Image (cartoon, rainbow, N blue to C red):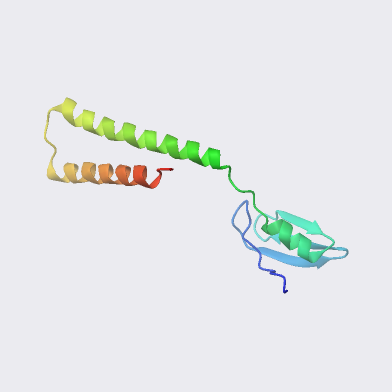
Length: 114
């Protein structure tokens, strides 16, 4: 079975990586920030470069919940601001507020974790 030698972008800066043999070991390094890995076996050096840690699911759930709470708070603040001013908004301002509301609701729905 052929080995995939495709290199992922640099995990630190997103730069392009290159791979080359240096005296006794294979080097895989970013061409931008020079982050890199080495190994005597080329396949292992490439595998090490391409390996990425998966984000913890609990951390992602907590961040989603924080975003949903922030969106709800911002929506409530917009509603309260309109009630407290007692003034009707100009058409242009109302369009902006309506777009912000729609964007916040979309964000809430998109960040919902079941």
